[in-house]
Length: 441
Image (cartoon, rainbow, N blue to C red; front, side):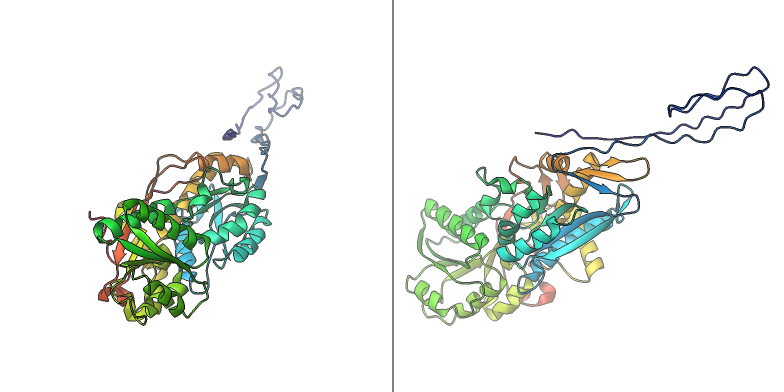
């Protein structure tokens, strides 16, 4: 059901009437229901400005957020902000802050307030962060989470509160699947689905590198487990053979037992789309296991940060990473990068800052469509209408591309590239690579 968009424009007319001498017509009453006073024949002072009629606040099945005249529009960004994967969420926070700055820090005459919550990149952390945010009756909308696991743990609380969240970096395919549960009604994303990333990685390995056997490793996260499976399925469809699929834990440090089992199968290629800590330990230990000397390696966007390069050390040279192709972003991206460096004194920390910027502006545009402004400046935000407006996003010109949302919240432009780390990128000042090596443009 699509709720009606409400726009209220109030005007107050000031009526200045002077009664001149006896027998003059009585002064008209303002439109307040008052009875006109009888003329006394005396000259009367001009009537003051009439008060505008009060606005009837909208109703909405999901509730209405009321923002008093001097209070801010409150949004939140949730996702991993600490630990080995903290750069993923911090990078998105920076994208949100740039979007706010581009609006002058205000929307609809109100200051914009940003709250952040650390979801720790785990289902448990996501649940705690989401429950805290869902309990805040001043929130109008969210950007996040960072990791798919956080959304798995927290989306039920967000949706039950009538809120909507737009993830810049969740890529697990089932989050926007047609058969997803009703708890995902408040979920959308500007990130790609890994159904695209896994397919692109398989095509690169099979068609570009010409390799025919592969092994995979995941870290138990919903993101990594799903992505390595998409890769395995697509690689097999192309004619390749997946020799072994292994798993490690996110906090595991000794990868040699797993790598030894993989080495026994003699794969041409190894795909481990995990997060920073586990990825660094895997890559740094590959060279210590006999039989993997000639095995090509690739991780994915969860490791697209210099923290991963630092953790892997010299072993990172020659390694491939599948991730969004930032050279396919719009022309505005270069200006965005300058703002990023000017505001935060660093190059981008990860890959999803632009997706967070687009998610924030999607939220702002939807708020402008549905919010109702009272005569005194009070703002009313109907949460169901806001959700409908987000899902109705069509041909939105973002810096990651032109975005249109599917009925299940897929809004991103899925353009994937493969990057290769060289000796140049092993120095922080030179990270990230300037462009993917595939597809060739």
